[in-house]
Amino acid sequence: MRGVTDRTRPSRLQDFVWRLEAWAFDAVTFLARCFPIDAVSDFGAALAGVLGPLTSTHRVAETNIRIAFPDLDPAGVDRLLAAQWRALGRWAAEFPILDKIIADPARVEVVNGERLRDIARNKESVVFISGHFSSMEIMPAVIIHAGVTCQITYRATNNPHVDARIRRSRFRYGVRLFAPKGGDGARELIRALGRGECVALMNDQKFNGGVLAPLFGVDCHTAPGPSSFALRFGIPLVPMSVQRLEKARFRVIVHDDIRLTDTGDRTADIAAGVRRVNAFMEDRIRDRPDEWFWVHRRWPNEVYRRRKPKA
Image 1 (spheres, rainbow, N blue to C red):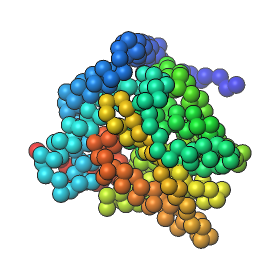
Image 2 (tube, rainbow, N blue to C red; image 1 turned 180 degrees about the horizontal axis):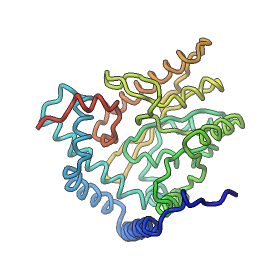
Image 3 (cartoon, rainbow, N blue to C red; image 1 turned 180 degrees about the vertical axis):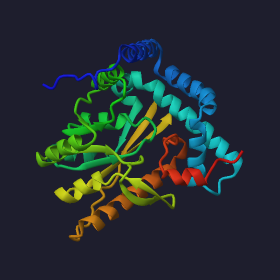
């Protein structure tokens, strides 16, 4: 095992700050687990509804909304901004109690769940794709609980102590298979697909160096990985989405397979796949715009320099 070098070892001050953040995470988790599920969700909505507009991220969300919906009037933009902050607050507050939500059958409805059961029963290999819709963490739990062997990707936090706690939180609702992102992660996913397993990836955020494809009519860099894996192994993309029904009650939808065409021109075929993925994401966002993760800089930096929110 490789040792920790001085360059990678955090300073004592950094480690102390990280531990303070981890203790704060523990305190929030403890409090959240002391109250009823819907009360926790409501509190998160109320808190983010007040604090969110005071942050610099509010301007990012506003710019994103204006990019996606250029014809939306100022009042409509304000309503969507307020709604997405409340939705984001619910997601954050619910994370420490997701195991309780998932354990209650009345809180999670699965549409087309038979497709997941078929994948598990037939030991079919597929690439699950989704975006940051509503409480997106529920999706991998539904996949795993259906009996599907699946590598679930995640982005580790900078704070290793908090990251360990997040992993333990996921363990509570059954998600135990993780593949780190980056080159090593891609190779791990390829090995998993080679074994006939499944992989699940979020495919709606900016990926520097990715394929340029339109989203709401504006080109953005999108990760080619899901389309590349599907073409390489001749398997389908299986899109999924999560919708919030009321408070902490959800609908998980397994959408129709996306089967990519292999023409022999791998570059062109991957680009075509990425465009189809972005079209799926756009349809989901248009359908329920308040439930998407608007606070991420999805489009290229120059787009944000050109499109500043109106005062």
